[in-house]
Image (cartoon, rainbow, N blue to C red; front, side, top):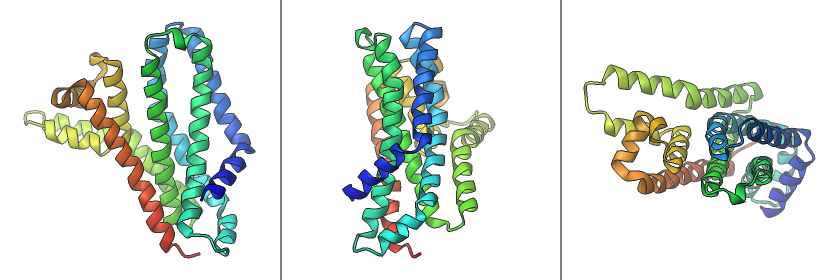
Length: 260
């Protein structure tokens, strides 16, 4: 599996899209810090971008890489290599490459602008960690959709639809429920609704880390009320870990049964 992982990473390092992705975050970081010299405010601005953009890019890269490497995958399957090792290795190669682009692309501008002298370095590292979590989660979800759909257009369409649902539609449905049934106690439903969406979990984890009570919103306020800032952050972290492990486990199970 390590050899396949290394090959996938090396293959993506030669791709111009990886350099474009890295360059985008480099430019974004420098522009944000140039326009706003306050690192704390730059992190808050960056939060909104990462929560929406990272899942989208990870979904597109994950599904594209699966279909583009399909012929090579079929060649590997003819060799005495475990099926699960092939798919998990390829997936980890994509997720690690994207995560490294994110970490390097945003890390360099903030280091240049004095991140190590700032007292919010841990909040910035938390933001990058959450970006890495979202990368692994949405790459895995996209890879699962690719494994389950032979038709490239259908798989690509489902992957984009999944991102659209979790990033936009889910919040709309959730807020509508809260407004319609506002006269009833909805704390437990708000908690469950937040747990079922990794993007909402990531947003609340960042806000709890930054302790921005004004931006927490209803679900974030419920999270803080039930668990407090420290316990809420720990529970959010554990739930994001679970969101990461479950799709990887699904890749493992589906990959073992996959026929070409």
